[in-house]
Structure formats: C-alpha cells, structure tokens
Image (cartoon, rainbow, N blue to C red):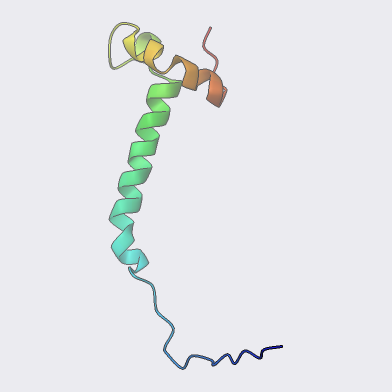
Length: 72
C-alpha cells in the first residue's frame, strides 16, 4: 500500500472579484432587459402595442405558450 501525504495550504482565501456596488449597474440593465423581454412575449398585441401588426406576436408565439401566457 502507498501512503499519501496531503499538506494543507497556508495561502490566503481569495475574495470576491467584484463588489455588489460594482455589479449594480449590470443587475439593473439585466432587469430592464428581462422586463422588456417579458413585455414583448406577454403583452405586445392589441390596443396597447408599441409595434403595429402581428409580426412580434408571431415571432414570440411559441414562447407565449411556453410561459403560460394566453394567446388565442
């Protein structure tokens, strides 16, 4: 049989790469982007639509069903 000797490291534990304060603008941007995506998937049709016609509706039609939004 062989014996394995394991030495414990004495190095310092690495801290976080970025602080939450530095990540806040990216989190806000991501939240706005997700909100815009949910709007186009769930509410872009009818009288309140920003883009006329049914092109956006047809483009996100399957996503509407996948996310449980009523469609037709």
